[in-house]
Length: 141
Image (cartoon, rainbow, N blue to C red; front, side, top):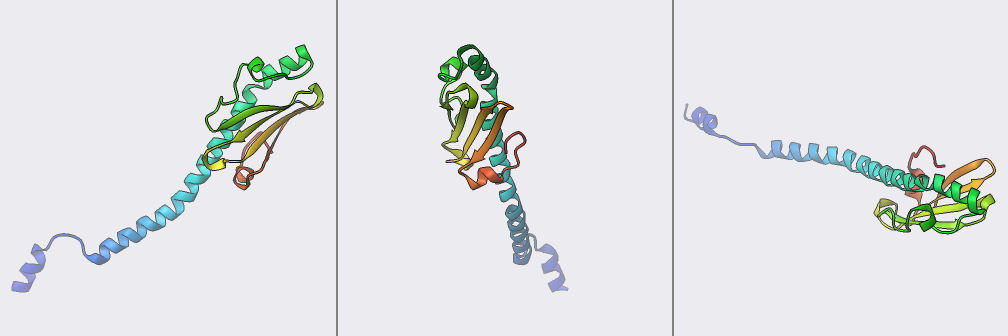
């Protein structure tokens, strides 16, 4: 009888119960961390693509009016318009005008997105970073 009362008065968790909880948290975090990293990479790539696409209309207008691209200020933007990287005009000729976004920070650092003009329109290409190439991004190959 004395032993029964002693067990009834005990409160708290056993070591096994605590170890099971820690193991469950470990399994959940092993699944969540890679998914979060993929989400961050995709959002950074989408931000860079949006930055590039935001200057397409002004760039096309400048090409039609001046015969080529001159500088970012004429497009209404600056090199550091996006905190993840730098925007630059890499080719000023009207037939093959090109603008690049080079990542300088974040999970895609050293990645480059280039948008190039041709007779058929503008095309986006990703390069220089395996993580950037692996991101499923609509509108940029």
